[in-house]
Amino acid sequence: MMNGWHAIVENNGLKTIYDKIVWILFLFVLITYPFSVNINSLSIILLVSFSGIKLIKNKRIYFHKVHLLFFLFFLIRLLSLLYTSNISSGGRAIERSIGLIVFPLVFMINKPIFSNVFFFLKALNISTFFASVFCLLCNLRFFIINEISVDWWLDWKYNNHHLSSYLDFGPNYFSFLITINLLGMYFYKYRSLKIKMIYAFMYLTQLVFLLLLSSRSLIAFFLLSTILLLVRNAYLQKKAKTMIVTVVFIVIGMLVVSSIPVVKQRFNKTYKEIISKDNTNTQVGGYVNRLQKIKSSVNVLKENYIFGVGVGDVKDELKKQYIAINFKEGIDNSFDAHNQYLQSYLGTGFLGFILYSIILITIGRIFILKKQYFFLLVTAIYIYFSFFESLIETHKGVVLFSILVLLILPVENNMIYNLKFSNKRNKRIKS
Image 1 (cartoon, rainbow, N blue to C red):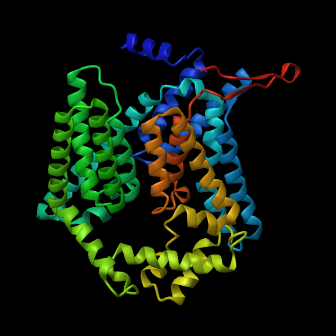
Image 2: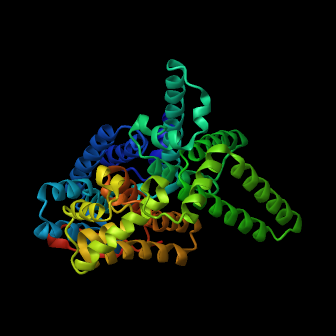
């Protein structure tokens, strides 16, 4: 046990007691992320507090241009309160997005000790696995107590609304996290066959959970990404036999997945929504709902295309549009845009939309140049998922966005600033 801890201390450069405490707290933030929001929030507060103490002691920060983009994005959101009518709603929106400045500060103080990226990603993966098992067991217990047929597990609507609710975790956000974990396992390095088998079991468990949650967009992204990774691997090996086996495996895999009842139900429903001529009946399903949200968002932007309406007024203005087009479900649930690009534009205008887009483009460009394909894939899923969810508007969304984007940023080319005013200097970290 002690040898393992000594190895961690040495491998992560934990030189001081504050390094060790901050490292443990950051790990705890990742472990608690899939579970209780309250415990996760408390661990974030402790992480920020000890990072502040460490800054006072060390007087050194590690700055990257992406940190500045995060600060500017938060500042634009904050300034929108100046023209927001609903200050109470705006204040809550700012409070939820506080991670946009908290986590850049944490990484500016501690980036070198967070450089073992895959270790932390594996910790998040393991935590998500246990969260998935917990939800499945809770659901099984619910079925047994209430004498409900397990056939309900094959109903997409039930799973999508209830399966992840035991942890108060939205199905799309849970699916997003699982998708990153599953794709990440393709890039892990396994020290032994035993460890490989353990991760294989974790992979299958989370894959089942992803399919049960029935998030169409993320299942599609996962399948497409997996196919591309398998084809790339076969191409790199330049063996005809490997390519044939890969193609056969992909075909069989697609046939198996498409025959799973929950997946079949979900995509059949989507097909019916798309071919339906009734684009006003919001009971048809999610596709029509999204069309109504986009239409309402565009109508609001027509009159507020420069500055938006302020982060506090977005839902109020959208609700007016929902009433105008008789979007009953939107009225009852006060939906936001369910699209981070539109949400940013609505709340903070053209500048907010551009800043959010630049953050994603900047990190994507970094990983293209460095040929770090998994991190590029993580960036791609953020770009893609932002079309389907307003992830900066929730605790789960903003925490995962801030942590993962800043965690995978390379430590190279960070600027070191020594905060001693009598001896100010800066330099770049060598690769």
